[in-house]
Length: 127
Image (tube, rainbow, N blue to C red):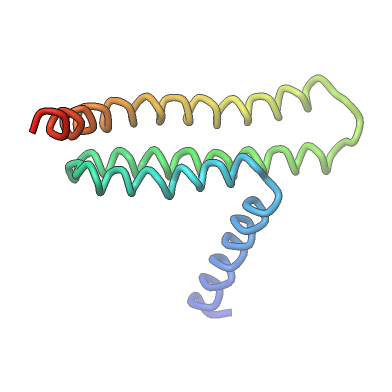
């Protein structure tokens, strides 16, 4: 199989994982909703190119971790249908990774978006 065909198949498999996660995981749909709204806010508030890099990196991190968490959950479910404390650790740790990334991304978003938002509000109120 040539390299180009192998690459195309790899991308198709990866995209299949993204689509399946969007269809089956409500949290992924929430993350994607924010991933759509946050860039609109960035455009409206005219954040800097460096702030764009940070914001887009946060979006990519949260979405990537949600995909990894989904893979962990599916693997654990494949291995056992019974409750097992180690299965719980795996699932909880995966969910915790997403939670931590989402919380810190929200904090970073506040640091980036609040100052220009206050400036817009002040300009509107006092102009």
